[in-house]
Structures are given as C-alpha cells and as structure tokens.
Length: 79
Image (cartoon, rainbow, N blue to C red):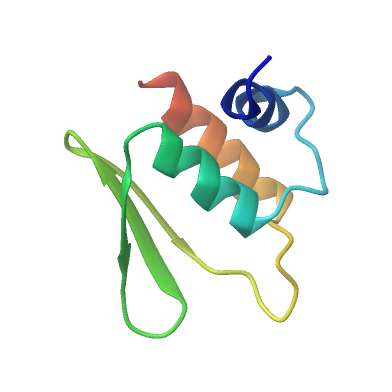
C-alpha cells in the first residue's frame, strides 16, 4: 500500500480520526493533484479542476479539528 493510499484511508475513516495533521492533509491533497494557494493570515485554499477546499491552518498545534476532517471527507467524495 502506497503512502498516498495510507493517507487517503486515514482521512476517510468513519468516525473521523482526531490525530490528523495539516501537514498530512497538504501532502495528500498535493498527491491528488490539488494546488495549494496561501491566503492572508492562516487561510489556505486547495484547488483542483474547480473543486475548492478552503480552510484555516490550525495553530498553534498542527492537528486538524474533527469538523474540518468531516468537511474534507465530503469534498474527497466529490473526486
């Protein structure tokens, strides 16, 4: 199983995991063909073929909140 497959599995688990990081998300979305665009402050957009994932970088910790993971799961289903 490749790293991409392992990351994708982690992000699509139900119930959502509580230990996923922004760094892992950025790596996964990059492998899936998303382009990262930094906004002002901690805002970040990931864009691919008209599909947009818009969020704030978590801080001071790198761990994503569960509600963000749920939103990301919904967007990944659209691919």
